[in-house]
Image (cartoon, rainbow, N blue to C red; front, side, top):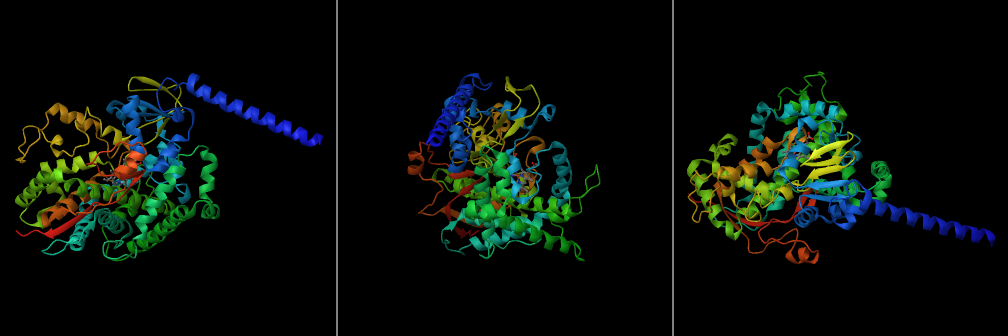
Length: 539
Ligand code: HEM
């Protein structure tokens, strides 16, 4: 009896001590913490659970914008984390070479590749090791490599046109999130593994995009959980994850194994007589100009998985968004004008090349506006301040140990840089002195407004950790979009599907914008639709 009572007393004392500790911790975070002066939602200021909760909901980008509208340009999104929404902060955090030793990618990145057993260029947080990766990987995005890549991209665009076509009459509604995904994965398979996945023409490999989305969803939340030193080893343990992590965790392991097998096949092909001049050829033959070291087998496998995930999902998200914005009823004059221009400027579809689209002012403005409105990596990219005492961001001294970041979605919907941010307006990228001939022209921009728009644009992030595949992404998007729009009349189907309905948004207290392409933010995006019909254009 006495033992039981001692146990009860000890439990009671333990509970009181724990509650007191938690209460004091909350008070400290609210009042005495160095970030206490920054506003933010209560839960975010006192606990680290807010970010994983938002990540799990798929609404994080929308919440972040909502929070910036409510609290201003600096929001405390976790006890030790701040989100910034100004172009000045964007440049300091991601681009300042002076601060490169003081900031590094946050521990979040250590977790996202943990199941693969090796960091990729994207997840490597050590500045020195990353610099090596980039010196080698950059060679796969050289001008020569991009020139060879164009042919592979065009072959896949031809297939896309074949599968979209309904002949001379209107096609069935095509679900463009799927077609864009199949196209982008086929391109990346072609460039990285030496063979397209053939997703556009066969269902056999369509599980690959699903794997990547599922693993991105799983890791986006998991990597933001508190106590990463415990979480990380757990998600590397396959038997435990098979049991705990369900289908999503199994998908992640499946994809890693799949990528490794494809890489082995591709490496064997490099020994063949006829060299395939795809991106992997350039990677396999690249050596670090500083150390003369090529990638090891493990590094190659990590890069291959990264290139497929980072290259395919982002591009497909943007391509699907393109069809959404261009088929909005309010975009009718934009679409009409764009198609007229493309058909006037290019006599044959084959004359639509990457370099020709680069110089097409109106087309480029359309692409830029798509990337602005719906950035494919919408939420903030976390960086940690590692050197004491700290650094100055946007005029504020921020102490070491703080995780800081900017969200492309938030910056891209800032009224100051983009008046009417929820309207699709390619004209905002075109200087006043360029004639567009739009039926109902909106005012074109003066140089100052365009400079503001450019300053806030960060779809590909900036600096040494910015997107290595930016040029390839523009090439794929431009060739696919321009050639499809040249070849077909396009129109929105009567029925539509969406990743988020107005009712769902309102139920969660999220803002609703009728003309926005809805995505779920899983670091990459999950999307649904639009449904679009195609008819071969009669010239
Ligand atoms: C519309 C298309 C694309 C968008 C919007 C995009 C966006 C981004 C962003 C925002 C980052 C920074 C991520 C971070 O800091 O965590 C990034 C990094 C990266 N992207 Fe892209 N990307 C696109 C297409 C591509 C393509 C086509 C490839 C390659 C085939 C690619 C390869 C990479 C790689 C390897 C990194 C890591 C770079 C590093 O850390 O050094 N991306 N991308």
